[in-house]
Length: 239
Length: 239
DNA sequence: GAGTGGTCTAGACCACGCG
DNA sequence: GCGTGGTCTAGACCACTCG
Image 1: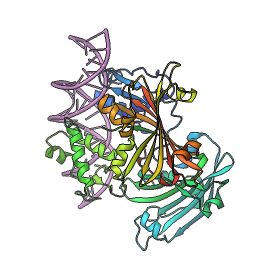
Image 2: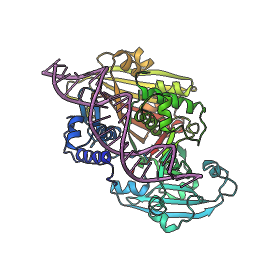
Image 3: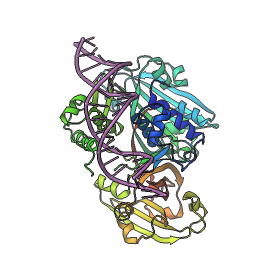
Image 4: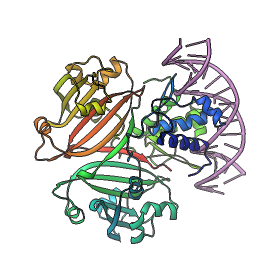
């Protein structure tokens, strides 16, 4: 939202135009020199903006030719990166509902202690939430938050969005995550909280989430019913 | 492998050091100004290298402090991005074996025509390969390659690596892919070629792969046995 | 040969963390 | 106040595409 940054503003403007289809797919953008004149800035600043566009799949830069606009409509919606459920469902525009199934401050067991690099004295917030989409409980989110970073938390916050609270109220900066996707057998807990039909397996997304100062503050497990799971990504081949 | 690029060379050197543990986790790298002196280059060039390190999860840059080294050992290895099976299994260092189950030039059906944006006259190479790891057939790869881009192909090439052939022999530049991960019910074909035990579902990774000139040349479906599937990624939260 | 993007430079000013 | 990374500039040379 900051408009201090010239290159971010340019990136926003160009990506919006591409998303809205105002620029034709497979045609080139104006050259870097032209853009530099148009935006009254230097070429390096334009290049920063264009590199962002390329990283996010909006354009393909070809040496000697120009920056070709890619078809971004077919992507439907990239769900890679680090996005909270509330942000995700808002983007999807689907009716969704969150139920807090478990909430409390606990002394972590060995597994969680290890996942969060905790000492014997540390406490964590344990939050288990089910997500209902189009009338079915489909996702079970289990969060473990280090109390050192999140001293205070309520059930009401968890019903809304933990990330919103952390970023807007606590002013902490969530920075990056190590993410793992695997498939596991359903547990009793899954059957208890989700509408699982006859599925015996469940897709599990595990996240270790870090703050800007590189401290690990959250371990999250997101369990998705097989038939409703979808992960979309844009990948570049690095040379 | 090119060492023309100063910033790439610096990125390689620094990432190697971090991977080998020669730099301590949670300590900072030398400052950008120091590195600029050490490598006899300008600060912007150093910053290009450091940005690459940050994007790939090696460091976290903090304003006013420095570039903090992250623990890259716990990542095992990120399998995101765009990597062929041969490259992947080499990185894993596991015994693996590829069997070409089907190979030929076909007139594509409606579905493949749509996936590859083909016309009525176009032909595609259809390649079905099973991958045996540690004695079990676990992955079924189905590739569809546009003959306009790959005029010639042999079974022997498919037994080795199609990507190696495309990049090293044909000198084509594979550039980016749109990737989707879902879970589907097993098909007859899955049961025929894979050691599926009693699993009823299978993880499916679908890729649309593009060349540097943004032309779509390949549609790939990679079907993984549930219990052996694992996807690891490093994600940054964009603001 | 003209135009494109890719790399690199040497400087400048700013916002932030820390003592 | 000092050092850090973040942004921005104006210029340079190169490799590449295309007519």
